[in-house]
Image 1 (tube, rainbow, N blue to C red):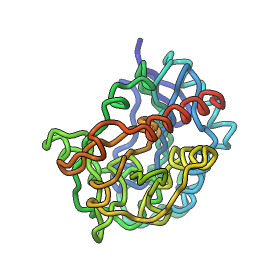
Image 2 (spheres, rainbow, N blue to C red):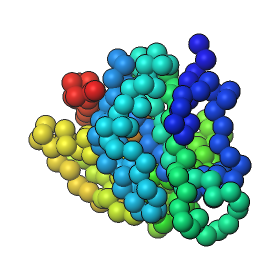
Image 3 (cartoon, rainbow, N blue to C red):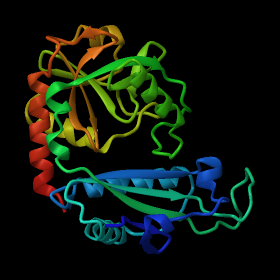
Length: 286
């Protein structure tokens, strides 16, 4: 089956899915994106992604081209057309095509470019890495200062991911001023006793939708949360570590820069949080 991709008002076969060479997303990385997971054909935490999308667009002064209800209809159509059981729906919204290249925003504004595509990943929630745990390395965080906006400018996270692959590990944690900010595409956590430690929300990190849900469930389970930066040394001496993201859910981290975390295997708190998260998200999926 040919994958159907939504581009500016219509679903077309992926070979016909094209945008202009003058689109500012291509020329300037002037756009934002969201990734929503699908389990059992249903969307997880859809409303949270809509809220963050609206915020990201507003921060870049790009008009949101659709209401939440319209986005939901488009996402459901994408899932149905592509027979997605488990996987992801990717949305990208750019400032559009002004007809030529210019650093200045088009004035008056042009219609935003909208692209929606899916990726099927059967068994997404049963990924063996969730039981085995990830190994990570640390790399300097040299990204721009507004990481809270989910933009399409992902070159440095890609470079960090490639550094992790070259080191034969699963991911990289980014470090700024001696403190971990986040992973290449995920939020980072350590565990000391029953206390979960993770960096507080600011311009320094992405305001993870999965992060918000997991911390809410952790508090409901009477786990203590401490929102502050932590160092690589703290991570190496922690009882557990884990990451959260829309596609990895809650995944334990078992090694940091070659040093085992805890017993060097997936920890019970991280695994329990993964169970809780998936159970609650399946209940509320739409």
